[in-house]
Length: 145
Image 1: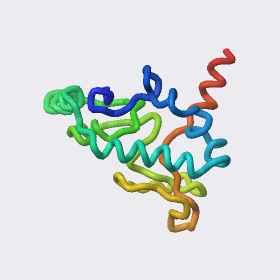
Image 2: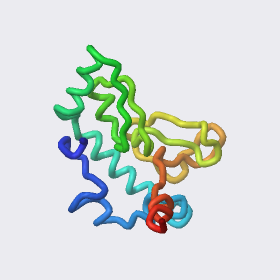
Image 3: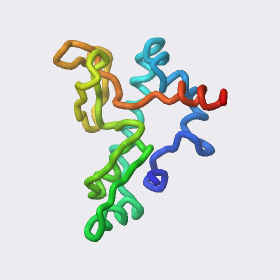
Image 4: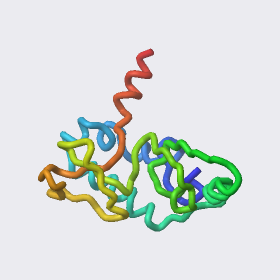
């Protein structure tokens, strides 16, 4: 849905997985191997998101809330549904505008469109990371079936 707003997709032709190897930027192993690359990847996504706006699809779903109990379940990590006015959005893969502590999964913070850098820590003095679910392990398990 967000591609029409200018958000680069992951899987489509010309998508992010043609530019990046998923194992290099979207897994726990990637974080351990090259934290700076992972941070750079998601900082770029956050900067792009800041320049995009909800499209007619996002706005139409938000308008439906005037008449129905609309609950949106999305794989998208952007906040365009919320910016369009939707109030019940479940993000299955996480949210770009949030970070979480590497030491305490319950410490989640809204950072908006700011970059996350090495050395940015929570109140427990642990590094902050993108609030995004790494999927590569799930893809490998699915392929084995």
